Structure formats: structure tokens, C-alpha cells
Length: 331
Image (cartoon, rainbow, N blue to C red; front, side):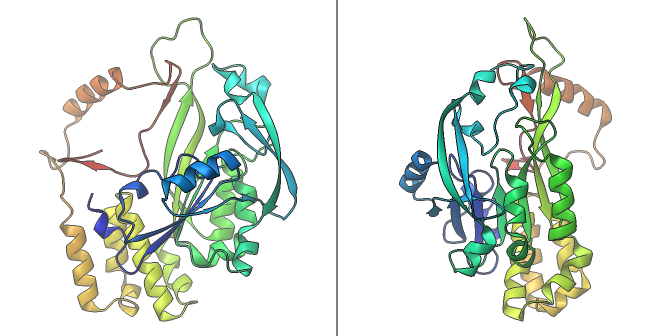
């Protein structure tokens, strides 16, 4: 997908919290001329590596719902490191539990998003990506005032099973995002684990463990939300929302925004034409049948499943959020 349609007016600002391994899809393909990136990561070793990547501003902080001192558990697999202790009795039901074994503990002083906003260290943010192994709800709570005024969307990891002791689960995060931040669920990229076996065999799908959940602002509340800003800022946020919807492949949502009556308050007739033309110029892809074909879908669906990649035979997941385009195909 052409990254130039992602940010349509000024730069879009991405706040990536739990930024281990750097910026991922869809943001890794967006031109830096159109994207500001703020990476937040508490692990000192990973902070050094991220600074070397030069993807954006790196803040070496642990975020939480209050300023306090906590212990960060650095595990054998760094990607599983968390403020929360691993729930070993639960994890022992699955393979590779050693990933969650604590290698070292680090005392860290936490900050809040609202606190960083007050001192000007975080200014304007359009979209948040959040993956901190169980601490997502606490971070959102610590940024409620800032986030409900600033962000048009959120990608957040949510757990359906207690990987960590006393961690919030999907329903806790989902309720907060809907009720306190005013966004609605658009998509879920699910990950499944199979219970431990001597020999793994089909079918591939196991238990739903966690997911990346995508939230965007609902169209019926957009006008009220935008009306609380000056016109310049409202226009920037509207462009950011259009850009994010394009980045994740929700072009129907993009058109719905452009066709909504309230958009005329922020976009001129010519601007709407230009944006509509940009979206229309995104290749439609290859769809030989207007309404699809059930028989061919089932045949190719079975073949796709046969060759689906897994993690050592016991872990599978959806490929990505939204819709992604490669060559002539959307998938």
C-alpha cells in the first residue's frame, strides 16, 4: 500500500509503548517524512538497541497508573518480560515454559502518560501501540486524561488467559477503552496455543491465549469529539484518523468518514475530492467474482490451512490486523 496516503495532513504521531524490536507493520513502511515516532521502553539493554536503530525518539521509561517503584522481571525470552510475575502453573500446560523464567529483576521508577504530558515530554499523539505483557490497563489508566483528548486509535495486546499472575484480561481492557476513552473495537488478531502433547497433530488451532486488538473512534461520536478542539487541531485529528484507517485497510470506514455530513465542517469540498481520489487510486486488488465463490473459497481455504505456519507445532495466530495488500491481492 502506498505509504503516502497514511498521513494526509502534517505528520501523524505514533506512541509505541513497549517498543522492543522497533516499529512494526503498518508503521514500518510509512515514510519518516509523514510520521513522528515516540518509542517507550523500560529495559536498559533494549533502549540502547532502539537508539541505534534511529527510528524515532526513545524514552527509557516504565509507564504505569502512578509514579512509584516497581520490579521489572527480565525473562529468558525478553519479549515475555513484565512487571507481573509469570503464572507458571498455567503456563506449564503448554510448551516452552522456560521462556518465562526470570533471568534478572530490575527496580524501576514508573511514570504516567498524563504526568509526561503535564511536563511537556509528550505533546500531541494521534495513535498508540501498546504491548507490555499485562500492564496495558494500568498504563491506559495513567494516561486517561491525555488519551481521551488526543488519540484517534489504539492497538493494544490483550490477554484472554492468565499468562501472568493477577493481570487484567481482555474484558477489563476492552471495558476501559470503550467507556473511558470512547473508542470501539474494530479488529482482533488472535493467537492460539495447543496444550502440551507428546506429538502434535492436526487440527492446528489450540486455545485462544491473547490477541492484538485494534480500536478506532466511532463515527457517530466523532463530531462531538472534534468540536472540543480548535479547527486546526480538529482537522489534523480527522486527517490522522483517515490515515490510520487506510493504513490498516479499512477503506469502507475511510469513505464513511469522508461522506459523513459533519466532515464538511472541517474539510472543504476540494479537500474531500482529493482524499476520495487518493483512496480510489489504491488498487482494488484481484476479485474475479463480485460476490466471491463459496466452493473455491473452501478449497483454497483448506489448502491454505494445510500450509499454515506454526510455532513449533503448538502456536498459531492470525497474520495481522485489518487488511493488507501485496501485489494484486488483499488478505
